[in-house]
Image 1 (cartoon, helix red, strand yellow):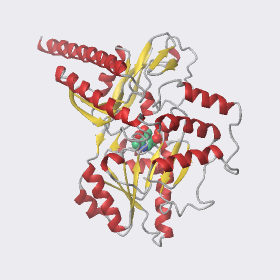
Image 2 (cartoon, protein in one colour; image 1 turned 90 degrees about the horizontal axis):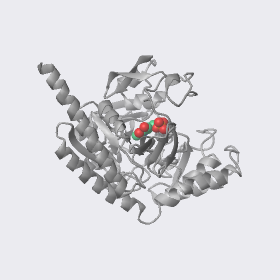
Image 3 (cartoon, helix red, strand yellow; image 1 turned 90 degrees about the vertical axis):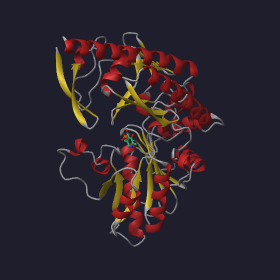
Image 4 (cartoon, helix red, strand yellow; image 1 turned 60 degrees about the horizontal axis):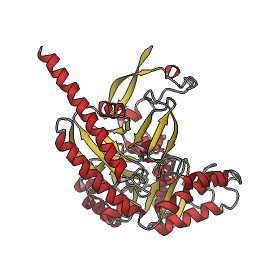
Length: 430
Ligand code: PLP
């Protein structure tokens, strides 16, 4: 039996036909006792190696999604597996009541690699953004301005699914039915500096933005706009918070995407690639911006857990090695060039290529879900996003040969979609 489920996409709703989890071939134990908040496709993976994933049925897929920009070092990277096994055999958890040598090391490496002086560890991106929002409000409070709690955010943003971060993201589809929207977020069009200047009030305390909108459809924020935001923050005593949860840790071809624009934030959030697949987030800040978060003002049980810290350190061993992010930047150019050729071959399917490094979007002329399904039929994984975009987010360790192989599969997927469109047109004409 097939049942209908509503899948959220592109700011609207589409109906997808998906089998009940209990019916998925080869995966009889997948539980249907899970709250059905996700529109899962009918594939269950069993193992992964590098850029490849193998299903329970033995089918191999090339992974151009990296678990939504998380498995940045691919699957089962030997250095990460070694870190997990070594730490797993020693110590998992002690709580934040005690010193955390692994966390001290990771924090120091993150501050050495960025603008920041201090780090607060979390378990997810939304929690890192919650820490950033609280930090900014508290900073204004200790500066003598508790009334400056409001934060400017931008249309198309995605900052997570907690009550505060859905309010920050401002998307009606995520707010609907969850009671009063958390107060304190003023959303503006992306790219309009005059609108930002006009929106700053005596209650405004910070500006929060993704340097490249991920879920919103790989919308690269113009560098001049980011620089303008920095100036507005400096002029009005606001903090600039950059959400680099999807763009950070090397994905943009720099350690942080804001380096591309030459802008320095006061606060930055990371997650996704920082743990390479292990749940780990972080809120990084200057010592000044963090000065309100004194002992007892904020906390989390699991943040900074020894296992997460060991894996985060192992990720940085690789991402911070000389030449790593430069290689991502170079591969990103190769990828975008190849995708531009693909667009030229399939102008009826692909409209536009955008992105930086290995965070790339294809604006498509079919639905992103249809495009991703056609790619999956060619055993290639991509990730739908807003603005009719399909994301290409391969592991950062991908080889040029694998990129080329991915292009072959995308080419065939486009051909199949063209065939579907031609057949539909023929049917309509008859
Ligand atoms: N911010 C951005 C830019 C994201 O892309 C995401 C997740 O997709 C989040 C925040 C939320 O992260 P998490 O799902 O780990 O809470």
